[in-house]
Length: 637
Image 1 (cartoon, rainbow, N blue to C red):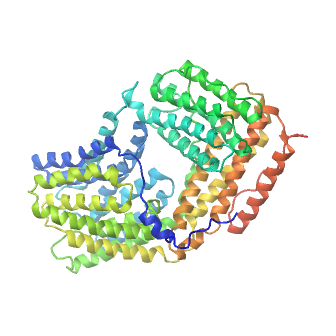
Image 2 (cartoon, rainbow, N blue to C red):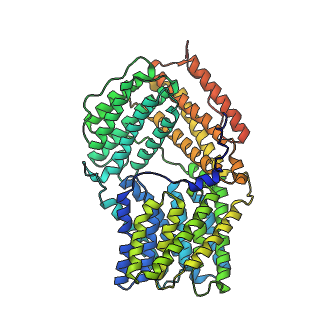
Image 3 (cartoon, rainbow, N blue to C red):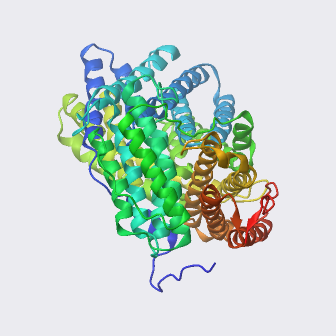
């Protein structure tokens, strides 16, 4: 597959990424929670004479606010709670290490924590947030001069994060009072799946079909995550939860049929998209669907679409059902592979080097009294933690945005500090900054500027002098450390994160294809939700999710400086071939449901795609099991 031709005057990818910002409506509910989190916590602590504990709680609320992204309330328990609990443990360990160890042993302990946190961060987004808070809190505990003991600081930290989490669970969002407002995030996520199915059906036979299929995958991933949380399991505890699970499960055969139609490339009748759109409206309004337009039944994929619509209408009108999420629990082998695989090893080593080196340099400067009267050596390693995280963007983009955002935030705070009354003006500035974090997370530089203002305000409320200049200096030094370490050669092959994602996507695609070819006895299942089909949908979801994660990793790696971006060359062709293989497998599954036999065309295309992927797999050196044989069942003539 040829690469797209870039315009002659286009910006280099690393600079283009640094200038790119996410778009979307203002998350007013998150803004409200941000305003009610760090500022009020700090105010209450000041009023009762425990300012230092208020600073710790406000820091925890700030970090939880960075993780407070759109999604379901129940999903936010894990997304916010797990990193906060790990961060509290890091604060406890850092406090006692800082109190009882000298500079060299403390640096070694922090380096070891960096190695562990880096490996953990390769597991997934929640684990990455937990690794970040572990290291940031450990640095704060080791270096921030506070009178409280380690366990008291940890309790305050947990309290600050728990306060924001309680706001997330308790406060309704605008327009969410239809039905049970506690499930507004889940309801929106499931409705978005039906909208994405409709948009894919509209795009069938056009050059927009691939992009719409990718958007459908993203919507399914988001809905699956939204429905995963406390008491949102397969056997949910309330009628609302069971209904949402059933509605999500009913979308899976629709998504499968729409993908098969897109793979065939023949335009679907215009009325085909009306049914999914009415289902989306029924989810959002918590109503019955009413009559649904029946699509044409002239082809296997269209017949599958018609059957899926009938099944969805029945599930909606019944309003009950367990609604399998079609997820597979991660095994110990999956976690070990993520921790100790190529991606986990490379990331762990880089985090350990950056965190340990910045901690050692900061303490050397601190003990040499080059910091003057400021006791902020912990800022340097804490800053390095954010800079070294690849899920925040390519390395050079992170460095540019962090430097620009810190300078802007420090200058803004210097102006505010000159005119605001203390401490009430600074507390109001903390509340304002907390409210801006949900909007600022759309760009790393903006987020850095807001966080810089908030942190400097906390420092002054805690009784220390204005520290804008030292904040800028330490950030620029951290940028230099991370740039150097990020380009150092490491043991093994470079691009471990991309290779790990490609390997996971290849294994998931093979597992999905193997099941479709082997489980011919599942064709006898009646209805749209037989056991074999449930397993198939689980494997299909895992394959498409793994492909999406690989695409994200490749996009980030390709936007690095040329010295690093070259290690991802060819990876986009590999994942594109895998996507075509999974699409073809989906089309084959739908055809097999209809006729019980593969056509010669299907078998030939599967074989061609497997051969193409095998060549690309060998070229980039991926180590995954051999592909299943094609075919393993009788062929139609």
